[in-house]
Image (cartoon, rainbow, N blue to C red; front, side, top):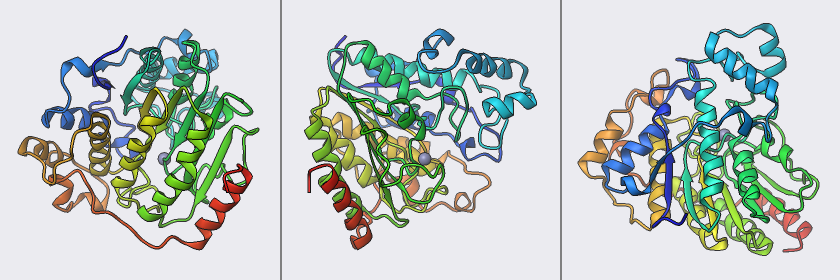
Length: 374
Ligand SMILES: [Zn+2]
């Protein structure tokens, strides 16, 4: 199936869904992107698909059936046992039992499975609810219950797509995805993530059996540094691999306003990577990921849709768009008390250039030498 232009996969299940009033994922994210892209006239019904909810059988291509059954059960009962917590990671601080604890991740998984099918003949799919890169086969992990990037890649593969690149620019290392494709010669995983941050995997020397290139970056990463990483490392590695599909995990937690990382990018850094990867493969799946400031996530991911559609991002939003951003609330965080006006009136952050530090250059040199690009 080839549509006119990129496809946006969303769902109403994300609207009003919260992990709990104290959890970083209490904030609206995907619903903001749906509302804002529509308010700006950038998303019509022809390019929007409601995500199906994956069936347990479809999840079992990677997830353990007993874990999926536990997830369904704790949603129904809203109660977890000691065993659910110990064995499945369900009912912990990071992975609480909340009202949609099975349906919501199963919907995100269904979206990525669908994306793989939609992309069989080529094209672009945007699935901002995807990107749950910490999910493990039989265990919830790091706010993730299932691993939709893994399922999306397996879906592409089931459609006959062989060489696949996975690029991850979330502030956190994609430990679940790396586990799934360790040693896989037809997958190249590239991750740029903050050093010494949870889950503490993805060291410079970690190669996942030759399938991964990991670049841990120091706190305070700026736009100039990310531009160098993009031009010197990401784009040459992807181009050389000559992928049949690219999956980009475009987590929004590496921007300065995010409460869970110490990286200081502007959203321009993400958008430039989104645009630069597009011509490098005939199939392109762009996922969301982390992002815990409701304004920076909504603005960044709405801008991703603009970039994928070649829409010029206006300097100031139309009143309909501004109204969507003004209606957001961020309870329980000091930055939500008096948000700066540009969080309401713009999508684009001011660029955050800066010095390119020697420690970053040295790590890049190590990787480029090892990968034969230096
Ligand atoms: Zn993250």
